[in-house]
Length: 321
Image (cartoon, rainbow, N blue to C red; front, side, top):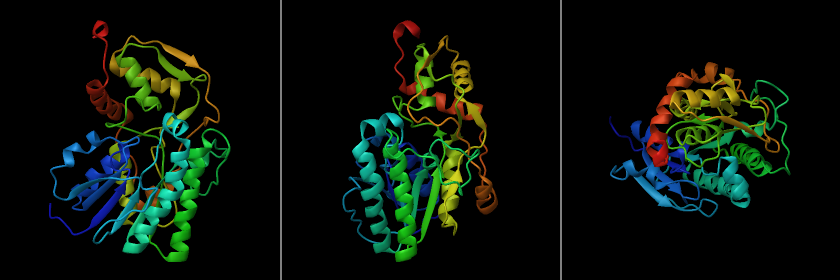
């Protein structure tokens, strides 16, 4: 592929989504500067890129001033703890990267005349009273609850992004990411699919919260990254949902994971966490009509691809091999 002189900066680029985004940008011919302080990211996610002369890794906390020498054409802000286990353990850092980090990343985009894309989340809708969730829904968020550090950080980052767009004329994009899965998720991520897979592979009890009736809509990472890239290349400044509208109860998802792993694990139920959303399903009408995007990877195919990765990462006790 013919390379271009386009330089794209990805904050949180050594994370699950950020690393896949670096892959896509490089495949499209971009030069990529990956910034990550490795608080939840891992250089193993981008180690395969270290020999690429269009890729550069910078270990830096983007809550502090960001300096990049030379031209920058795109700034994609993906730095943030993103799973409940992370942002409950790192509440201050989560708030700082959503506020100060967004401010610094927007400042870089403004200084370079670059396009800016913020990775927002379906969590801005909170425990929704509207279902499925369109971008026009303002949400139902508990600002002082345990999950509020993540929800409000992302809501603030959207507000600041629009302020820079309106006041400074920065060209901005906002993607609201729904539940995503795939290779490079951490084994101890705490989210449903990594937890179910690691427990099933170890033949441990698979933990489902509540009655397992709460729903999520899970999107395979390749589909998500394609939607994000299309949004980056578009002229849409309003938020756009990117996710898979195929809604599934958590109990059913746990059963599917046990099935594809061939595990003898049993399902056990634990108390539902505070403010855990009861439903989650994106309305992707906007993405379909404006970006020509919709997910293509069937869940069972995506789960099997993810399982291949987790089989390499999960340490299985000898007795259960």
